[in-house]
Length: 118
Image (cartoon, rainbow, N blue to C red; front, top):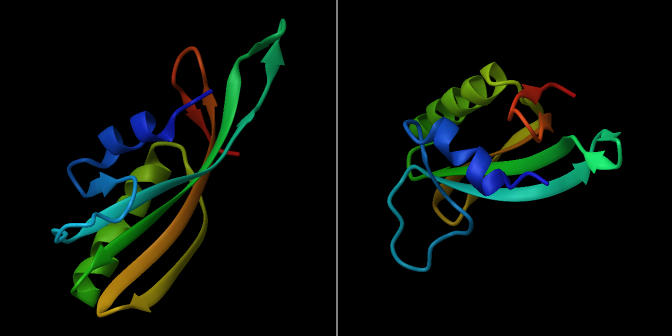
């Protein structure tokens, strides 16, 4: 089973700081919230899980609409270039903040860490 909290943040750490939930203290923007949505088994080979199917959501928050959109675009480009597929996306205005929400999915080889589009 693949943990998206260890898989995704290193790939995007130069673009966005990622947290598992919105911080209680004053947040520094832009901020990304990573939420795992699915972590099912892909292919089972000789009784062992070889490929994991992962799906997760990343919400980009910012006080400025343009910076929020630009950060979300960079993030999406990076994850797509690494093998993920963006399955949805949307823009939401929330409590004086701008939010870009995106979901991604992939098939990940448990042994090599290779990421495949699904």
